[in-house]
Structures are given as structure tokens and as C-alpha cells.
Image (cartoon, rainbow over all chains, first blue to last red; front, side, top):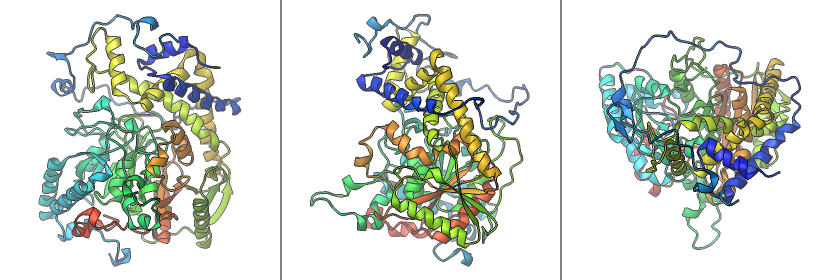
Length: 108
Length: 526
């Protein structure tokens, strides 16, 4: 079944990436159909695998500060900054709803 | 040195003996890069810093204190590795102009050994693709498109058709690195390998492409695609060189906790490898639909070579092979959805002018910065990670991953030492043909023989084998046991010596000065 507009809208908000056009939506539909082939495999009693190194202990270093003080370096790549701060537009403002957004999904 | 054969000449020895100086070598490579710009293999060329590094190297050679085999050797690095002071773009608008403040661990290690960093190579945007055609700086052209071997075999379709429309792709996503090595502009290059991205272009460009075991080489500074599968890849013109580069890169890195802590000992490969005591497995599922009859025949001939040398060659089965691509598709898009979340315009990279709110600025930045392929994968990944889908897609894929990894465990556990498979389904496609299908379809087709090794974290290597009927390189792949790179490379070296893959014959006019080749033409540096 095709993905509903509600889900598509939800995905655009979660991903903060837009579908752009019908091709984008079709791309997702194709991806889902492709992924559905997984259902053919019998995975009864099989544990999910997170990492091929699951049998080993992850390296944890000592909780000591060994480097830092590179504020100037790090700020070099930011477009908007003030003193030692990255400047962001106002937060806590949700993305406009579907009807008010610049999106291909509008009116679907 | 004689033992290596007249046509293989060691650049490293030449540097040590003073036949050529690091500066000369660097200058020649830079000149060659300029004259091969039409290949579009490089995104950034770091001319000034490279020459400085070459000068330092020269001083060391004069003092008789080179840092090692890699001292003075020109190398190139795929543009998804962070390089301090040099732009790192991942072939995306999102990172155009991004100058990294640090070197990826593998880059630092090369520099510490005295290697000369010539520049950053082209790729598919964010390493997503199998053609090196989907980056923001345009596609990479396979140097073999301009070889005498290819030209002789191609039939001009019309009077007006010229080589411009006939060129073939490099494969991907590390196409720039493969092209750079194949065209002699550098002696070794770094790529990355998540689904075959080092081995695939290595096969199409006729070079050695090594994917090390997951956890052997640090990923610190490699802009991540799939954290549980990515590895830095090594591209060279011969197996011995790959062993040298591996020796300088492998080992635990405190900055990458997914590197194993075992002590890694760099190794040299035997001059005359012996394969008679080995068991070579031929997985029947790798006779995939679409595999060209040429490659099938080469694969069979290769198996015979091993048989005649006394090795035990047996057919084996990896039953879940055909699900590896679907599994990869889900796990990759899921990890991509997470990894790409860092690109929001705030700390680095492209930032949109939109500033009504943080969310809308992020959305606009990402809308402007990512291409269709990247956006498509992010959206698919987010879909598979939705609460209602998590179990059926993400967890399911993780379970299938275990089944795939277990297939390999079973086969290696039954006494097989090395697997022999094709690397690609066919030789390189012409660009005009390749772009007729979309990125995901192509990746699904092209990764089929390489992906499972990433799924299981195993080491694998492409060895150039022969030329196809169209005069283009075809390679075969060896897959080894975890952390058994020495055995893998030993077998690869033996095979390389047997097949004697021909050198690319480049048309003189196109490639500027023939003298430039005096030291590059040698396949190896070690």
C-alpha cells in the first residue's frame, strides 16, 4: 500500500529534509518495496546484530582531559558567530504545518 | 631488485639511491594531475603543501634518514577524510568550503611516515553510489577510456562520434582515488569501503583495492556513512604496496573505540608465496544473475590456477548472499538518517539564509545542501526507523545481518581459508549507459558481490586479473577471515604474479610528456 500523506509529512518533519517532487515520493515507495523482501527470510530465534565486534570489549579511555582549548579553530567554520557562541535563529518554533509549508506534499 | 622483474621498478629504492628526488617525483605527479584534469579524479590539489612535504622528505633522504618506505611517496586521499587546512567536501554542497581543523588518523599516519599528500579525490556525494558519477563536482572518468587497449576494441558508431561520448565510468564510490592510482598521478590512495566502494572502482580501473577487516584501521576523521560497516580502503598498483600502506595504517586508535586493541604487527609478504596448502572456497551464490560470461570464465580459470598449484578448491554455499543487498539497504539508510543529522548549518558547512527559526533554517540548509540521493536515503532511513516499522525493518535487517555473518563463519569454520569470487558483474559501463538507471538501482546491482564482506566485517581485496573483450580491466575478489590480512594478501600476491595483468597503454598526446612516466610507470613503490 502507498505511504499516506500524514506519514510523508511526519518524515519531512523528522528528517528536516523534503521530498522535493513526485519522484522523491516514488523513490521512497520503491525503497519500501525493495526492503519488504526481508520478510522472506526466516529469522526465528535469531538475535539482531549491532556490530561485528560484539564479542569484544569496547575501548574506553581514562576520563581525563587530554586536549581542547581549540575554540578559535572550531569557530572558524561557522557562518554566524558572536564571541565564542554559534548563533542560531530562535528555537522552540515548530516547523510550519503542511498547509503552511513550502512543500511538494501540500495539497496531496 | 631483479627478481621483481624488469617492468616493475621500485620507486622507494630509487628515492633511497638518489635516482630521483622526492621533489622531482612530486613535481611530476603534480604535472600529470594537471594534464589529466579531464579525468576529474581530483577535487582539490594541495600543490604548495605537497611541495613543502616533498622538500622536507628530500632533506631527510640527504641526511640518510628517511622515515620509512613511504617517505616521499605521493599519495591521494578520498575527499571524505578530514585533512587539516585542506578543503574536505564529500563532493557535496553541504561541505563546500569546509576546511577541516584536523587530520583523520589515517591521514596523520601517512604524513607521519613522510608521504606527500597531493590532494583530495572525487567521489559520489557522501560516498553514496557505485559510479562516482553523483558528486557535485561531476563524474570521474576511467583512465582506461583513453587507453590504447580500449580504443582498439571500440567500434565508432558514427563518423561524428568522438571519445567524448564513449568514456567509461570508474565505478564507485572511491572512483577518484582509483583513477588517480590507475593514471599514475600517485602511488597509493585512500578510499572508503562500506558496500564495495574501494573494491568496485579498483576492479573497473585495474588496480588493487583492499578492504581491511572492520576494526583494524581507525575511522577517526572519516566522515561516516554506516558506522558499523565503514572502513578506510587502500588502493595501489600492486599487492606489495597495499601491504606497506596497511602496515602504516593498521592498529588501535584511542580516538576510535571501534578499533580492536590487539597488537598489530606490520608484515612483509613472501617473495614466492605458496598456496599449495590452502583451501579455496568458491561460493556458488556469487554466480549472480547478470554476471558476464567473460567474468565467469575468468573466475573458473582462476580456480583452475589454484588447483594446478596444489590448493584444495571446493564449492561452498553462503545461502543468505542474495539478501545482503536488501539488508544493506535498510541498515545503511537507517545509519545514514542518523549520521546526516549533524549537518544543520550551525557549526560548519553550508548554512541557509533562512532564519525564521532553528527548524526552518535546518530544513532549508539541508534542502539546499544535499542531493537527491542523500535526501532519498535520509528519508528512507527515517521511515524504517519509525516506531511502527522499527521491528519489521531495522531489527529484521539486523537479524538477517547475523545470518549473513554466520554463513561466512560456517564456511571458514569448515576449513576453507580464502574465498574466491568475482568483484563486479561486468567491466565498466559507458557513462551514457550507466546514468540511464537511478543511483539506488545501480548500487543494488553493482554491490551484490562486494557488500556481504562489509556485512560480516571481513577483509577482502580486488586483484586486477585480465582485460575484457572491450579492452577494459576485470578483477577478481578474495575474501579472508577476520584479521587474517597477511594470509589474504599472500594469496592475492600469488595470484597477481600468475595473471600478470597488463599495464595501461596511454595515448601519448593525451597524457602530455612521456618522460613524466619514467618513475611512475612502475607499478610498485615498495
